[in-house]
Image (cartoon, rainbow, N blue to C red; front, side, top):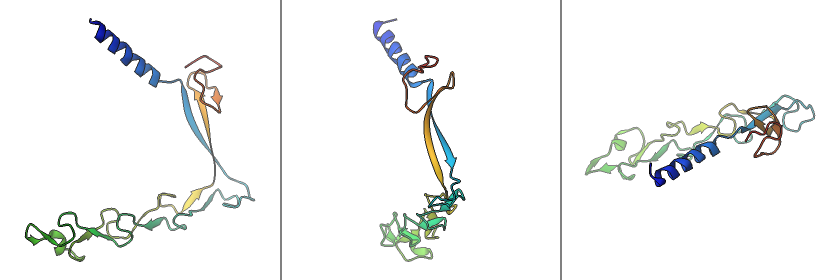
Length: 149
């Protein structure tokens, strides 16, 4: 085996080993149950501020019109000297039904995923050793409990 091939294999092996860490990141969500909370008053959820609790927002694809400019004809209703397929539809010539909202003019809210309510609470991040279960509030390179990397 040539020197170049051996060096490439060693480098490739070190890339795979470096990407496989024993320390993993873990997110933990703790729901709010504080009756004094200004958002949820202890109910654990509050109305989504992005959609005002409706679960949908005006479509970003068509800006709430339900229609987008036809890409086939460039919006003039004529393609290759004939009427474009968009001119035969229900909308005005040169426009098609928005593919994002299917003409409804609204899309699912990204803030609440269409529920209208958002979970209230806090998310904490911890790093956990996969071998011994030791928890850290920072990302250690080596576990201080078992020495795993």
